[in-house]
Figure 1 (cartoon, rainbow, N blue to C red):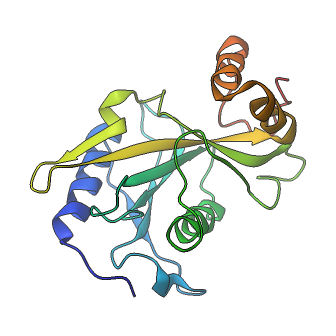
Figure 2 (cartoon, rainbow, N blue to C red; figure 1 turned 90 degrees about the vertical axis):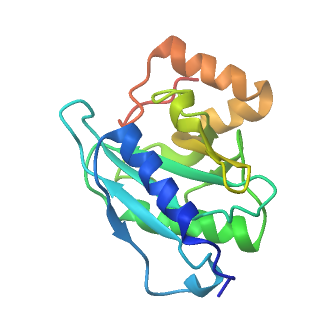
Length: 191
């Protein structure tokens, strides 16, 4: 098990999410696989829809240690309650700690479509445009460390190839131009 760091950063992350999404989370920790290789406090948080936010939100908490050179947390939105995102975020956190660091504008393969008949088989790490800079940065004043909070956007293989060819900004511009519904996992590709 990784060294336990000060629990105060864990609490600050939870409070940061609560302040942004105006909701108390449910906490999850997968009890199988190599979860002992994740940070001691790692959890996936599930935020239910609220009157002002009509989607489920799944977010990491403790994915990075505050002592990491570039600590970050990730979240993904869903139209419905879906425990696959608990496993997905746990797998990404494991990869981040034990294989290769992930970060802004990285992309990865989900290993399967998000739902039956979905073309969304990959994820793209973006800035949290739906929540803005208020979510993106959390300064842990006690240790003078900034944690970045990024958003995983489900994308199609065609969109992934477009990103590789034209860059992340071009992909995001295409999403904005087409006003995609980010929680419609059955949407068609925009490229």
